[in-house]
Length: 255
Image (cartoon, rainbow, N blue to C red; front, side):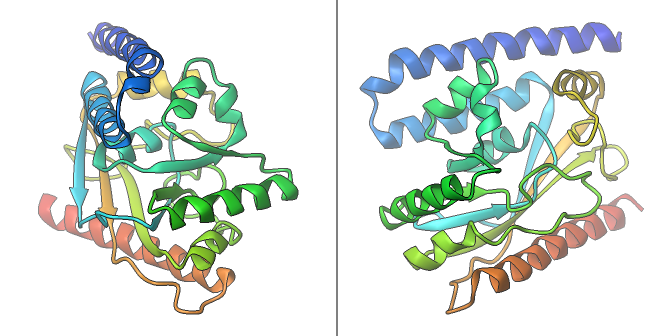
């Protein structure tokens, strides 16, 4: 039964992905930016519904840019989940641009791609980020640079914080956690790390019932003259505190 249900989720998701791609190619050129943002958020919510993942949002996202959202990174579902909570432009590794279909979707909604191995390209993206923030955009980054195991955070790379400093933008911490709804404990199913293949992680997620994604928006802060390294340390701790706080609340509720 689980396999049949997983196949059903997969079929719905593939149809929804195709619908999203056609919308970007055929409909987006006729829409305003605000209309595109609404379409992206609605599409993302519907995608989570297709694969039976419940979205739970804690806290309040900053409504108007410029703001840099800083989030931990655990899964291929992170971008869709954050878009379901609020629209933002992502800064993502260039590998995603080369993924079939997904790369086209990411590019179509304005993702900024960065080559992790190229310092020169990283500086180009930081400059582009600062320009976008000055224009009032909401940008989102994963300072860990890659996915973690969902249990602990990797060190944060500091260079992306330079854009917020240059643009004098707010920075808001965001904690992502995938949770088993029955127990309230962390769910390893959507994790995409180490030797995991994307296909394997996707299939494991589809086969696992009762997953919720909890997204917690923390208190937005000004950079206040702090260096990018200071900001990286501060916001890593902010996100860890948000994760621990929500985990504690779930445990208290389930006990």
